Image (cartoon, rainbow, N blue to C red; front, side):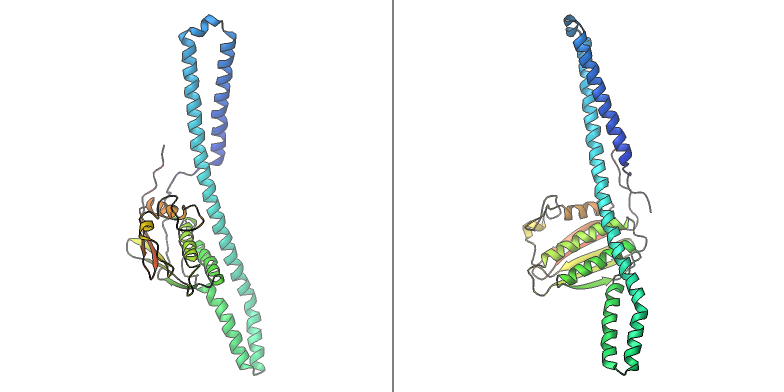
Length: 293
């Protein structure tokens, strides 16, 4: 995978902040000492004005560097939070798979015992129960990306808890996805969470997730049968601070669109009385994100 952007080094940011602030403090101390020790007549010389101008430039430069590094560090922390969520989801899926493997022999023994006792109906019911538990996990194990598989497992569990029927239409393994798995998880997670929220007041709750690809791009869509998003809101829904929720900051869809746009992809919305669908895509070969010098 190509490197898409400059990595932010927290240690470097820390050192830079110490150096710039140290220079500012040192220069201010020198200036104050100079102004206090020099005779009053010297205060009106051009040299004093030059020193003050230099001090002002250094202070401004230090402030700009501090602000830039603060934003870069905050961006890194947001990335670490997203990676932490992905790792947690992967641990959950791994524990589920390990538990299934551990219990598999026990399941076989129970079925064998029931059949020996000629409790065929009980054996059949037990097999159906076990089969349902296994297939609920195997439904999401269809992509080549472990992070995405883990995310889908977590979101399927959330939908099941909320009484939402989920249709997974995974037509591609999404092998060699051109961005980090946790970044794609951030995109899908925001869209699925929005769909779950949109279905709160719907009786027959349905959510459909499609993952596919063509010759040039990876494609996905998340749709639900919740209420229509107002036309006025549709035009600005990907802008920062815009939300249709009673509570929320309106940054989720803005982040989704930015992640895709930065890599040459995009996302669109179709919403009517029957369904609301977000459809997005990423090119298979993307241009590296340009960083400001």
